[in-house]
Amino acid sequence: MDDKKLENASRPYEISTKLHKFYRGKMEVIPRCTIRDLNDFSYWYTPGVAQPCREIHADPSMADIYTNRSNTVAVVSDGTRVLGLGNIGPLAGLPVMEGKALLFKYLGGVDAFPLCINVHSSEEIVNFVKAVTPSFGGINLEDIETPKCFHILDSLRNSMDIPVWHDDRQGTATIILAGIFSSLKLMDIPIENAKFVLSGAGASNLAVADLLEISGADPGNIILLDSKGILTKDRKIPDDNPYKQKWARISNSSNLKGTLEHALSGADFLIALSTPGPDVIKPNEVSLMAKKSAVFACANPVPEIWPWIAHDAGAFITATGRSDFANQLNNSLVFPGMFRGALDVGTKRITDSMCVKAAQVISDRTEELGLSPEFIVPDMGDPETPIRVALSAAKESMRLGLASHPDTLENLEKRAREQITHARNTVKTLMETNIIPPPPEY
Image 1 (tube, rainbow, N blue to C red):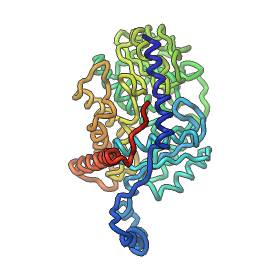
Image 2: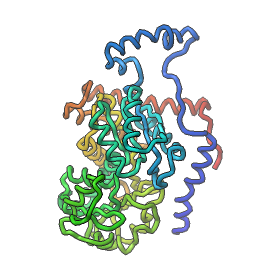
Image 3: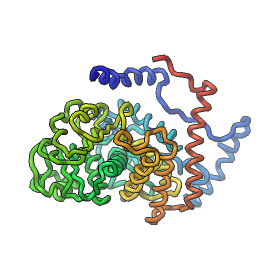
Image 4: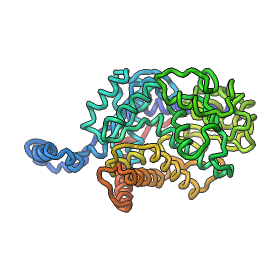
């Protein structure tokens, strides 16, 4: 049985290679305006285009009226931490960033452009992003190594008036928090009493810890581990990682020391964002957890422990980052809707409270669809989830006074539905007319 499951788990690699070769990528640029004849170019380009240029020069906010900037996002990566593949460089990371752009468009109606850059210092990346922002309404940082990613995100968020988002940090933390909210409902445990073990103390899990704290979890009930073991108050953490320093100081009130095995005794949650598996987490370690425990093994492309093995070891709920298993905790349930809402009100910043609100609406949507141990978040195909996330982001942005052009929730919902429907119908029409040809058999 396990051999068959392992064979199925490996099959996406073979199919993906064939499809990428056939289509030669996943995105292209197509017009959104009419071209009835060549005379139309006198309006879309010279001489007519000079007039909107003059008006934007006089009033920069008109760029949102005359161009598509307010619906565009740059997906910026230096390729130093791609999925579970590590530092493979910007060129090898391009298929991932194209995939990100595809999800932005299909799930959120957002036009995203992959920008894989061959510069790697924090200062160079910050300067690059600042240089290209006239073309974009938002920035999605992707697959940038720790701790560099912290400094880049903080620098850009503090110096720019468009939303900057690090998906490996904020997006991952948000969808994991949604899974935690749903699991707590099934466990019937208040978040302030739950015990959390976070295996891996990189960008993602440090953000998970931050969102847990904001959501009411007791920091002392959170234990983080890195490659050297459990974080404790007496651990020396490098000065270039203030987030890790913070959690070494305030977590683990029992001052436990040692390995994952020492941390897991009686734990309600294991949130693993560490080394791709399998067999990184052992069944005997899972068996030490509380009776109704949740194991989120989220390393990509292979989880730290296969979900069926974790379940056999006693886990009540299992989740991974993969679409071929139940309970996929995938950022795609977050970032398309988050940016849809952020762009539609022109928010200046995406805050941690916006992430918490998004996690709550994702969990609430799961209850509507039928919450169970095998269903703790909606799947990517649910058309309502990105709209709910978009509205929660827009509403919180307006509450915080961060929205450049606030609007009614009714208008925002209408716009979100129109943009997402337009994107999906475009793909459907291109497929029906064979402009996007059918894939080869596999």
